[in-house]
Length: 413
Image (cartoon, rainbow, N blue to C red; front, side, top):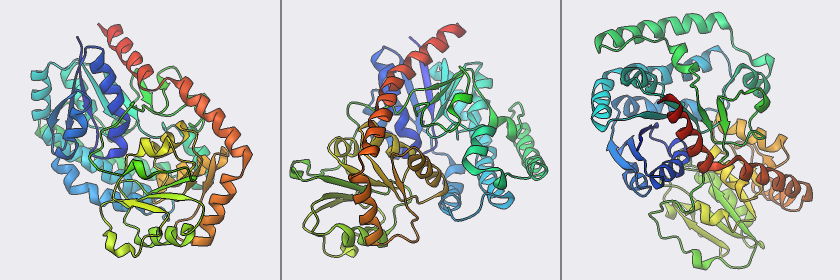
């Protein structure tokens, strides 16, 4: 029996892809420990894994700032904006060094044999080194390389390398100080950011990954790791779904405080042939939405996999989990990005002919309805969706991920 530790930042978009993998490892007789914040306890325990409470003070302090920075999708990709985003991520890693001795002690007690860590949980590199155990890097979104940056942003948006070197130098000084203070062997920020493990699991099909053909055998593209059923603590009335074409609308869990957008959806689809399921999140008061049209079912959150299995079209923020889940069910997308990473995802959806991407700041009820009608009646979109759906199913999902992880650990024995 092998013991695994799973380390993710406390965000649904990063945790969700790992859940089915953990569940599969547990089903194969392995032990899995998740180190996460309290809000994920029930979700983790539903997989059969063991929950370990890990409340990172660094994440509590800096996650709101990082969220604000990421949500500013209108800011250009240049020295200042990139520096701010990388700086916040690096600062979290630097300040998390003080938490590592306790984590190392707990993992040693748990007799961890392998660490599975989300690509943004950079400090996991220190844990792998300290415990002398292999690590597997998990990508909830695009794997990154120089080719990907050039393809997604273009040469005109490249960043001044001298600036990056100087910027990283200042961060490295802070990191070195923290490492010495807490007795951790030093690393540089660049090493943490660009670390490539011997096994890297990417929760996308290679066909969706920009420059996918440039990644070697260390990268295993498994597609979305969708469980047969995911924990859902709500009471959405699935029995009220009928035979009308189903339109699903959600802006995800992080950047969904968009009362104006939800009211635009009311304007666009009230009284139409669509039955509409709208998830408005926990930051909006339902009373502020106004009168709900008769053809809408609204709720703070819904069982997304069950809804997508019946949906005909998805208006989405373009988070990678939601995008992959939609494509897995063969559901076309109209993407309304709320942050720059989602803008990249929406652009990829549109360039592959799987849907459209709209600007969140100029959208109107008329333009939203027109986009939905265009995609709903485009036979080419549905043909391309069938091809991508096939790619996703052939990628292997959580079972292939579990196979690759087990083979990787066995090869290290």
